[in-house]
Length: 241
Picture 1: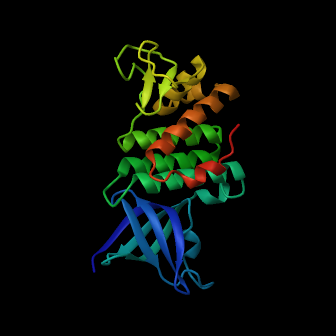
Picture 2 (picture 1 turned 180 degrees about the horizontal axis):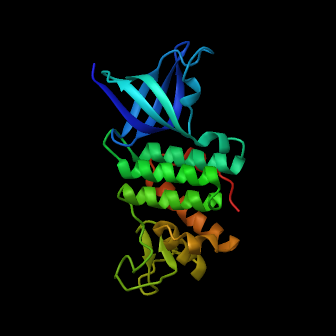
């Protein structure tokens, strides 16, 4: 059987048999991987604790017909230890993992991997307010998956912005002349915050008001759920300001 090695983030695990576990991971070079970790639920397991969600690992696997077999694991970063004891951080990070699983597949997704690691590291280190990290991740992950929202020119007529009206079904802002009935109209700061979160402009995002963050989060959540098949179950548990 071919043997390969890669860096990966553990997205999800579930039990298999009496002592094994199936581990779903997003890797740097091999896309999403599902591997069997044999015997890891036994107390004598050498690397069971390394195969938990939020862990960044160096993993070696044997290629299998349906599932690969994990043979060796080394911890690169244990983000979980600074996430699981904080409810707001945990729910946000869980939504991030669920999103990563939904927007990737077996194809190589190096940029998604890098984005995921950066988001988990930021939450672990509390580099920014947790909800801002989550919203920025969601927008950028969707953009990498081909669903980039437009917060600049009018999505219909291309009139340069800034524009305050966001049309969910069109995936972007629209000008006053093109605005359909029922379009969400944001305050100026919220509209600018959405663009900053997509671009990773943390100087602007960190100085935003609670009101602007709440309005922007509503748009991000609606846009994410619109594109995610069956939606994100974990998003409903995320604490918002």
